[in-house]
Each structure stands twice: as structure tokens, then as C-alpha cells.
Length: 170
Figure 1 (cartoon, rainbow, N blue to C red):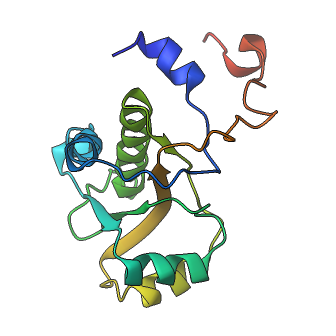
Figure 2 (tube, one colour; figure 1 turned 135 degrees about the vertical axis):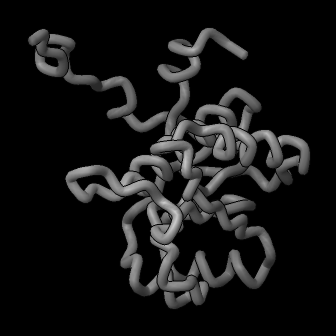
């Protein structure tokens, strides 16, 4: 693994994928990154649906244009019947699924596999499309695959707010 900060800075949202298949052992490592992600009270409500069948990919590609031809799309959810609820009523399942998704993105990049976080869709339609049970809350789609030779980071990729704007010491 690279230095973590280098890895985090270099990773970018891939919007052009090659036809190259993702090896099973690499997919397993990406999924392992979600499994070991920290979760509220270690309740582990994150759930990942791997969409790679022709039927599943056709469904998702007809549903949203934001899969960019990736050979696999991960549907990240959390099980609200399992997730930890904080004292103030916050459902930590969303936080847990977000952390798991971030870890998968970084593990994928470390393996030479690109990804892009997608949330530009109507989750009610997505839930119905894949007949998800009521306790399953969709959080994101994560198309993954080897970047095409034409894949480049967005011009906005390295634009960050200043540390002074982001950080405050109390």
C-alpha cells in the first residue's frame, strides 16, 4: 500500500472504464474493506449488493446514466433493523455505510481499480427496481472497474477549501 495520504490525494472519480474484468480476488479485497470498516457500536449494518450479471447491469444502466460502463456496480445500503441508534435518535447506519463505501473506494484505487460515488438517482425507484426489503436503506451506487486509457480526473479534483476555512480550533 502507498502512503495513505498519497493514496487519498491521488484517487479520483473514474467516469470511463475499460472492458477488463475485475479479478475475483481483487473484488473480495474491496468487499473486505467494507466488512472491516468501523461502525457505530460495532453493529455492522452495512450491506453491499454486487451487481455484475448482465440482467442486473442492464437494469442499473437503464435506471441511471452514471454507471459509465463499469463492469461492476456496488449497491451500498444499511439495514436499519440492525444499525445503532444514538441517544438523540440519529441512525448511525448512514454513517457506517458511508465509511464502508469510502474504504472500498480507497482499497479499489490501491489495487489499480477505479470507482465513482453515485447518488444522482431516486432511491425509491432503485429500491423498487431491485425489490429491496423495507429495512434496507440505499446509500450509494459505486461503479468500479479498471479505468480506460482516456480516464482523467475532473478539473475540480484538486480543488480544496483552505485549511483555515475547513479547520477551527476550539
